[in-house]
Length: 308
Image (tube, rainbow, N blue to C red; front, top):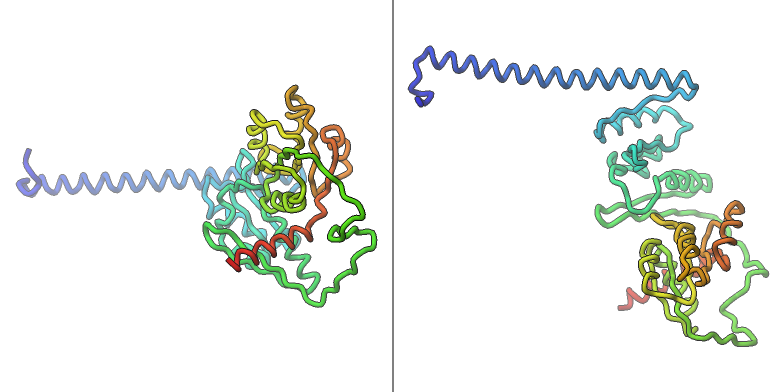
């Protein structure tokens, strides 16, 4: 086979013309395909928007084709609507694809347009941040955020001239010793809570009682432990990502080997609509009213870590 340099001038010209023609055809094909995608996107948006207006929601469809930048630009147009605080686009599986904060919230709380592109293990869409910012500003305070990739985010709320309420007489001070002692028999307790500090706080409260503790950071871990471990008592956080405390407790109560183990619901959101369900599933209800204790524990833990 002859190489190109041995071709005649006529052969070289023909070869170059064929090469240029093939490149041109390829570019034209790419352009036509891209144009078809844009046309399809525009047509679909127009059709869906028309349908939305017919049913009275006056919405605009967001066709992103897995393009985060397009999704971001689609949501960014909401900035002209002062009544909208937060917007998001979700996948067909209900996972957050991209999120957007409007107005000043966008500058303060979401500096990266791709912040919402990854689905997090623990729930939440960021709407609470926007609400917190509004509440902070209503009290003439300031909120700021510092994020480090792979490490997490630190949110700081500064409030000035905020008075502190006096301690109500009805609140019992557990730091004062009782006139009588209560003795407990040794027992095995399973603590199920997705928040590490909550588990540590429970152990701190019960450290002087002869209880031994096993921890589960989620509902599935608790069920796995219960296959071989039979505690005397289970403290169950009812709101956890993945399997909720309600689901886990329901499974426990339907298991002949586990149904007699008492479960105490530990929750900060004991709504009235859930009371009947909690009473049916759990032996007792313990509301999470120990925020001050958790803050003190966090401060003591930080102080001990610093002294080391």
